[in-house]
Length: 445
Image 1 (cartoon, rainbow, N blue to C red):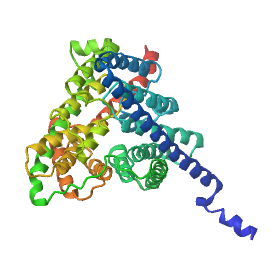
Image 2 (image 1 turned 120 degrees about the vertical axis):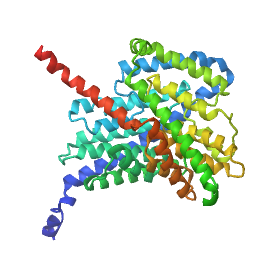
Image 3 (image 1 turned 60 degrees about the vertical axis):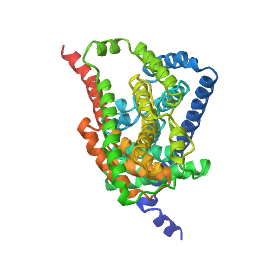
Image 4 (image 1 turned 30 degrees about the horizontal axis):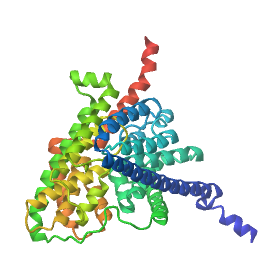
């Protein structure tokens, strides 16, 4: 009997070392879910605090938002370097950074803590940002740190853990396990190798179970009973695909232009005075908030959910003003994602299109608008389809959603040929390469 037990544990898959690694890995997936829940709670709290403040004193936004934007950017640059941006480009770039020291500049626990803190502060200041992008970087940082502690010798294990952490972050943030897997395939890795699929799937499942155990099996944007027959679908599909896809491409093009630096006097001034520019972006956002009736602040979650469920009426200009608010928030340089704001913009644009198409269910067109605009922004159509289907608990619009995403992808590429996250990741990689080459150049001189 002892010999049989000993022989049983000789299997590589059942060795104590492998079991220990798997236990630590599952613990990491739970930690990602807990971090996602933490930033979800702090995001709601930040939104609520700012909304309550400007409801009582509307013009306080002209003081709070500019000052907070300046302070957050200063903290990002001097205390939490590596926590800037949405977080997804940093996770993508980390997959290809060969030097551990450089990878740790964007995937460390210090950066993860800073990401949670700074994103929450941004929402407390009314920034039009989301928590989902930051959750991807936080999840990747947790898994990467876990991999270093485990000292996993398997080739490619660090990249697998980064992808798994990012996918688990999406799964736990949106409560959409399938979208987490698709996001890992389509956006993070652009491939799905045999040796990584189990890692990603396990992380997503464990993170999803942990999230549902605490928060319940909710749907991120509520429920809708909207249906759309194929005979009447062609008009909203075409309108949402072309219109929302083009605007999504314009949004991405603007962000990429500012990220690469404006080649003019304004660009030079922004590079020299980034803190002042962040404050000016906050001031412009406060002014836009006044025009919108204070509807464009924060993640946009409540506004999008209200439109889908038909419980909230927003200004006709909400979609365009939310788009402008998200641009101002992003180019200011403060940390924050664009997932939730982009979905809110798409919902607003979908409502505008529905008003031009009498007889077509508004709820269905709003969902098509979300997919069309989101696809136009990130140029990841499968992720857009799956994430909206899971978030709205609606599988009746599969064919119209696919058609809308396909058209939006083509329309977006007319305006912005390069995918947003991939281009930002390449820019980050270029900066890393330049930093690595400086000592060598200095030595030659």
